Image (cartoon, rainbow, N blue to C red; front, top):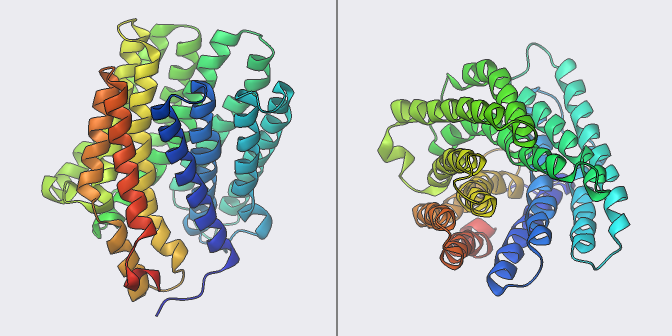
Length: 382
């Protein structure tokens, strides 16, 4: 029998629901040609992805540090970030005064740093050594805070081009990339139901090289392209090594077998493709917009939907494993391979400049996930 949801778990489901709504709205408005590109990008990121990352961190840190659930104040941080993100989108779209961006950014920085200090304190009080995954979350929050700190200067017109590149790369590779790479080595084996004893060692050994590479890409994109190319090469090698490790341990049939695992594998492929496209953009071979669009469709969407396929059953049915949780997990695994192929095709189409085809494929993949989530079946809904 399923257990009753707590207020925290209901809040997590609400965060996930708003994230999916923000991603869907961003895609549909893009297809309809409505809204400015920068506002739609922030609708997806500031309202959708950023709060979901904070919610996931608040969920995983207690597990990694073997400590109790977060307090109500900590659990409320992602929702506050979503409200702030809505203010950012409205200001960028001209619905609110431009000066709203300054207090919104200050609120986001304060909340991100608050979650960072909370994670550090949980790790410090951990009995024994905490799981190394928590350090990836701390690094991600640090990068996200540094990216946000550049916004007031960008809005004020000070070193706009350089700081915008710093801001973008610290968000897409620092905040999202580090949080993803800190989660995937554990999340994918969980999705497959096959543990990976090497995951903790992988996380422990690769944090500093990856963090250094992210900072090199962000600083190099703003100041010196060769530095960014070196950082991108390091990241590409690390991510490719993770994919090779998975192939050796689990085999291709398991990785391509559908469910959440397929989306998570496509997310890794999308990250590799995004790094290659970013390097090509730095060399002047392609424009920046196709690269960032392909990153969103080929990496971000399969990452979010794959992660939520694993997390939503736990948030909806907390406590011990139950038939209801298993039923919801099976429901969310429906169309898993088809979703993964849609996201992979979307990333490739957007990289080639086929905007309408790429956006339509991305919307199809996200729609299939939402269909599985909204219509999970009677056994999963109980």
